[in-house]
Length: 198
Length: 182
Image 1 (cartoon, chains in turn green, blue):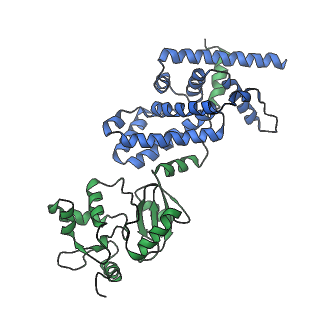
Image 2 (cartoon, rainbow over the protein chains, first blue to last red):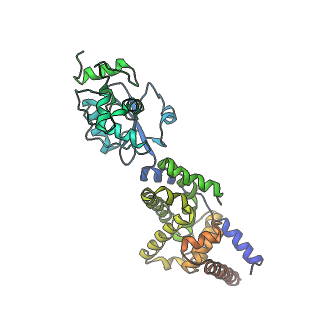
Image 3 (cartoon, rainbow over the protein chains, first blue to last red):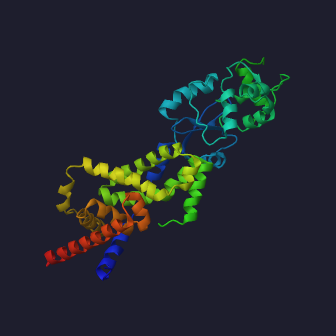
């Protein structure tokens, strides 16, 4: 069957393979939630990048750690695209949560994190504004009382600080302990929330 | 266009390790082909775009429900094409005026490549659905016959027959065009 005519036809058909529209890939990965949007907003520790997928917030990073969007991309664990503003449905609840410290109305997307870290962060998210808990409390909450050290590591890698309030987890002796943005910032946040006297 | 087995294996492994990162790699790798093929099957850029997006929305949901063993055994490209062909078929069913496009010629001033494009769209529209799908996947996208067989659920021998009859039909169409032009 392959004669010169059919060879010409198959060559012409090969030429019909064209590129997809440029924004199709981006629209698709955003639509399914495989990639995030990210925008700047204000917070009690100054301006921050907030990233979110269709499922919820995936990350929060202060600008003093990632000044430009490219800086943020280099530390973010997921693919992301810059947005000028927070999305309408996220915007009001997020602004309120950052202002009051009460983040029950904010959805989080912790996909891609290990199951232990997800458990630790979920337990941490239940600590009310104005209160603190020792690391051991979280270890007990997740039914793994021997994991205090691992709890500390999981909290140190909290991708959504402030909204998941790892600053409310303190040392057993009542001192504030470590914080990704420094013990002084942690102290200031706890004073602001009324958990500590200034 | 043709992907090495190692590349596909890498995407499979990536899906089991970090699902969303793996999925972005999967979209990057396979969406251009799905769009290009869907454009030839639906003949409308907006339909091709919808098919190329919906295919991956469905794939994402399905893959999330698969366990690692199933993901690691998956033949990704033909699996995606099974989804895409269904979406193209559903669109064709809902487009009742489609046949009227057959005799529609491009009259506005357009680039030569666009004229070529429209001519080939009309020629491909003259094939039956099985022939058209097989010809587009084999000759436009360079998919192997085994993958077309998997994607369409038709035996390899049947796919070969679809291809051979499809190309014959295209050749006869072109010959008729030449005769009519004289």
